[in-house]
Length: 225
Length: 225
DNA sequence: GGCAGAATATGATATATGTCATATAAATGA
DNA sequence: TCATTTATATGACATATATCATATTCTGCC
Image (tube, rainbow over all chains, first blue to last red):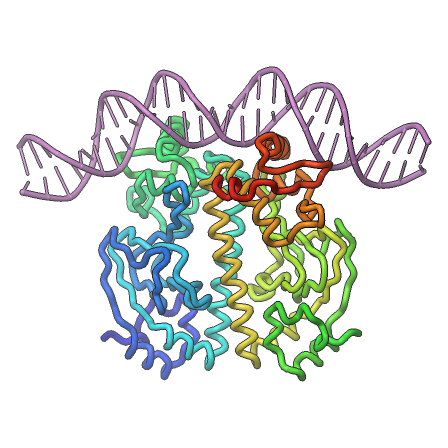
C-alpha cells in the first residue's frame, strides 16, 4: 500500500488539509484501483459508501435522461475527489462515473472521511468550498443549456477542453472524446455536433484530422460565446 | 429585536442545529428586513457578506445569460437560507435574488455564521447537506434543459409549482408567476410559453382564468415528463 | 491483412422553437 | 376615471435542431 503522504495529487484536493497522522490513517484504510478506459467506476443509483480520489486519468460523470440519452455533467481529472455529494447527502449517487482514459484511483471508505469531518475543520471547509464551486458551475451550465445555442455551447466546450486538459505537441486537444461524447456534453444530437464541427472546420475555426481536433482561431471562438 | 429562539422557520433550515446560547447570540446580531414584491434582495456580482434567512414570502434566484435574458435558477421560500454558497466560497454572489411576494427576511453577518461553522459540527453538516441537495437538483435541471423539450419542461414545472407552493381554494396555483417568469424558469421564449399554456388549456390539461393557472389533469401532465 | 462493427460524415426532411408583428386584456398611476 | 404602460394572446414566418437514411472512414480483432 503506497503512502498518502507522498502522493502529489493529494495536494490538489480537499485532502491537503490533513495532517501527518491523518494521512497515515488514510493510507491504512484506502484501497488503490486501476481502471481501464471505458470501465464504469460507479453507476447512477448505486450505493458507493465512500469517495474516490483520482490519482491519474480522466472520467466523465453522466446522468441518464428519461429520453434515454446520457448527458455528461462534468469531467473529473487527477487531483479531484469523486462521490463527495452523495456521501454527504447519505444517498445513492445521482451520476455515473466512466473512465475516459486508463485511471488510477484510491477508494476511501465513508467512515474515515466522516471522522475527518468531525476533527478537522479545515478539511470540512475545503470539501464545502469544492461543492460550492461545483454548484456555481452547475447553475451556470444550467443557464447555458437553457439559453445558448448549440453552436455557442460547442465553441465554449472546445475552449474549455483545451483550457482544462491542454493540447498535444501537434496542438490538437489532449483529451479524446468521441463525437458522441462531445454531443452529450453540449446537449445535442451526435449528427448536429458532427455537422457543426464540420462547419467550424470550413470556417477555419478548428481543424479536423481523423478524430483529432485542433483549435485554430481561439479569438473567433471566444467571440462566439 | 425578535428572538430567534421563538422563530418557527428556523426549525426548517440548517439553523435548527443551533443551541440556546447560539440562538441568543444570533438574535443579537441579525437584522430583520421587510421586502416588497419586486424588490431586489441582492444582485449578481454583489458582495453580500452574510446570509439571509427567509421568514416569509418567496423569491426567485436568477442568472443573467450573455444573450440578455434572465434565467430563473431556483425559487426560495420560507424556512430556507439565501447566499450560503457565495459566503462559503468567499466570492460575490453568482445569482440575483428578487422577491416574488412581500417578504420577511433576516440578515445574518458572515462572521457569526463562520463562528457556528467552527464550533457546531451539526450546523456545518446541515449546511453541507443543503448545498449538496442544491447541487443534485442543479445537475438534474441541467440535464432537463439539455435533453427535454419545452413542452416536457413546462409540464414538469407546473407540477413542481403545485407540489411545492400548493393551491388556492379555487384550486389554482398559489404562487403567481408572470408568463415571462414561467418562461424563464423553463428556459424558453415568453411567446412559446404562452402558446404551450394555451395548448395545454385546449387539451384540458390545465385551465386558464386571467393569470390564474389550474392544473386539471395531473396524471396526464405527469405522463408527459 | 482483411473483415465486422463502430465512429464519422453528409444529405434530405420534419419539427420544435424563436422572432417579429399586432391585437386584446389587465394593471397602474396621474 | 381615463390614459398609458405592461402582460397576455395569437398569427405568420424564419431558423435551429432533430431525425432518418446512407456513405465513408476508422479500429479492433481473429
